[in-house]
Image (cartoon, rainbow, N blue to C red; front, side):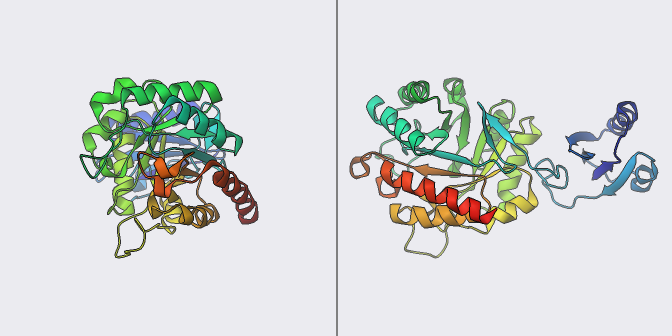
Length: 333
């Protein structure tokens, strides 16, 4: 249930209403908008007298929310959430370019790529230290050493870091990582999601290989219900009947997620296609569809990359794409 208050309601009157609702055992989520305040009621609202609340002179309207996701629902929070990562803003009209290699390999590699993508317009560095791989024989990442190399690259360039966390036990290693990425395979690792909800770090939550948008939003709900509201949703392609690309990029998910939720939406055309030559058209389409940012894999030597070289752009190609993204966004606005 969502209670929208009228303009210019005094803090005293508002707190009286909130205290009364909490007294009934109802959880309260407050969203402060530019023009009004929205109070989301969380829990069993079946015993709440809607007519009584609606009759209060400080209440503008009362709406029941039928969806099972509450905290991330746009009805609870009509205005876009804007996430600030060391001065880099994402959402609410702010666009973010995240770029870097699939896996951190050496200090020279990650520092060099970080400098190149920054020069090309990226404002966040992505890089994998822990890598979930389909085969146990594939490169699994440098783990703690990779984290340290990311920190060196960040210090050299000033770029905030995005890196994937796979296990709760690794959380202490990520203390200096700015955005924690939850990969597609862990989207429904609910123990991990709850633990991340107890942190105050921004989370990049990727859609699972075969998960619906509702399931993605319910995973975000796990994090938000535990107290962390700094979440970005990521569309990275889903598994379909297509046999020519790694996954199928669901462009329609971008405007649909914006309609359903107030959280920023990031697009990942690299994992969606698995082919470097398809990254550009999917990135441009995602920008035109209203994505709040892109996360793109860039490698200085894709032929010899230890992970996902086939879908990685060279720095010079990323620079060309970055300029095209700016043009598309200006045309779409």
